Image (cartoon, rainbow, N blue to C red; front, side, top):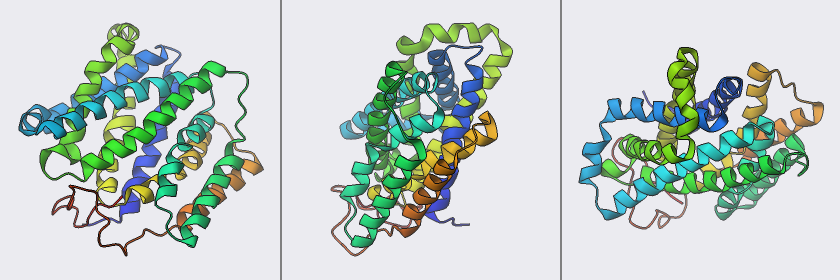
Length: 301
């Protein structure tokens, strides 16, 4: 059965914030960097057992290995910064900041008036949704902006991997990158992971967070990125702040104001109005022909 590309993104987006919402509840038992480490290590364990990425890594060329190493480093530091941010700021605020650099990627692909309108609606929705003010928690905002920059880098690197043929792309590339991220995370948050090793509840919860936050959404990301142009994917990330609000309501009882509800509507409108540009036959990324027979479609920037 074939699913539309947007369905993979939607599933990824829901789990992208469902896991962190549960992680916020886990902060009472484990420090944020420890939760981030548990997330990465549990995801790496699941993906390693599933895909055996070391075999694929050995077959990669130099460019493929470099992509995996950069991808893994980005995942490790991005997750650490994200958890340090949501420990200090509301989930919706961090989601909005996370979106800001990504909008530049979407702007690069806005080749029509319709897509510019979609982009304007999405940006306006994020602004109305969050009403971000840089006060109260400067360190939290610093971590949020670091996470935002790395999230944009993640989209670029992961989209490149999704467009490669062979083991460098897709789920094998993700599994290899997650193993790299687990190694990088040790000096970052390894010490804060230690208390969880003697706390079965925290250990089980951390494993659940890793499954919800990294395994499911990142696997779905690969399916989405192999089917969507990078600019289209970047614009669709405008849904993330809206979904963060909805998850905040369901899990953390953070009820949105009327202005926030209007922001959700604007964001969804922007995504609905946008149309992927398909008219340029020369649009594929340099060196990338197709994502493979399983995707059935070329990958375009």
